[in-house]
Figure 1 (cartoon, rainbow, N blue to C red):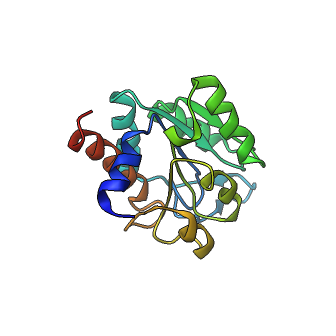
Figure 2 (figure 1 turned 120 degrees about the vertical axis):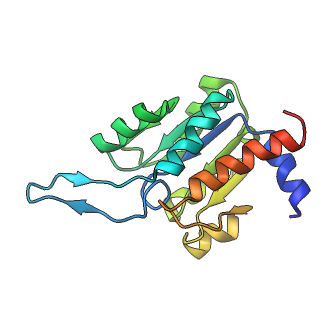
Length: 169
């Protein structure tokens, strides 16, 4: 797909959704001695999400894990819709379409691993970090130059915003 076609797909986007582990984080799982899980997020990735929100885009997190740190981060960023403990991510995708009256083509989704494939195969702008598994890279039409938790989210957000600027937001 050439750059103009990719920008045209990005121009249709009304909602950007993200997986957490391996996308908003580098995929590392850190636990304390009590089994409490900690996550490290990238500030620049977060700023990309904030900029999407400021420009009127809806944002969502769809994650299979249930973690208070993710809920806190979602609130900090102004995430429009948070789905935690979502084993079937396709259900969350359908909920987003129904709640916001949008089509799959109007959603960008960034995922990195096999549980994300069902969503990536449906959305208008399937995306992934550079270090996603090969099966995901095969489906994604936007593959970031950055790894998960290291700027991939920001690169997608910037691309969506720039595409809308270039083509007349």
